[in-house]
Length: 261
Image 1 (tube, rainbow, N blue to C red):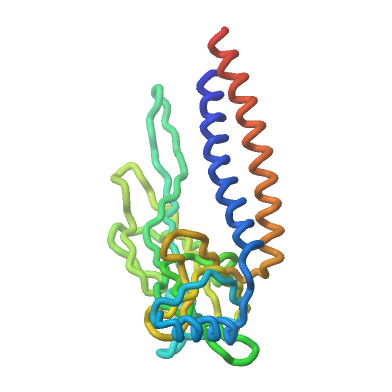
Image 2: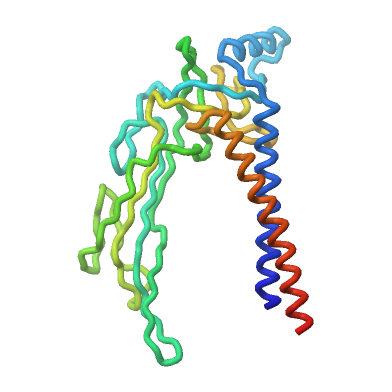
């Protein structure tokens, strides 16, 4: 009993840190100003006049539509969708055979066998056709469009196989595992998709770019509006707070009960 209580307390501690992070995100969104690209250019101009060319930095929110980099749009790995950003992953579903207490047991499991997130930058373009670069820096956006969630059954054989241009071994984990199939998932941001970006605007490479703050802070790229994100964080914070209190109290009760008994 006390083991279950200790597990609940550990989960409550993890939820507490997640709750603090959520609250910090919410406060950052509330306290950060949404600026147009011309306004950011004016701020950069003042910085240049003060002799700080190339060192401009300002935390801001930017809203606009996704626009490809100068080299053109990307093509998503699996669906070949034109996009400015994509991520895919391939999961292997397999069955293992185990013997416990003289009994034969079959267990289904899943493991990730392939995946990739595009690292290329892109831009956000406003209603006046002014652009600002976006450096995703490996950050996955909030609520991208899912273009694929497809399961392909394994058709036998022990050699390698290829689907959607990706070569996959058909057997993992030794002779006691049997591959059932592969699940392919993919997410993209298409050109023209409306985006909300919270980050640090800088001019280190010349043109204005928004990315992850150099000295720590929040960096959000979302297909949702700021209002929708705030509502989501407020709801999440309340649920986590309830979980922290409830998990801690129940965990302590179970620990005490286990010790007493």
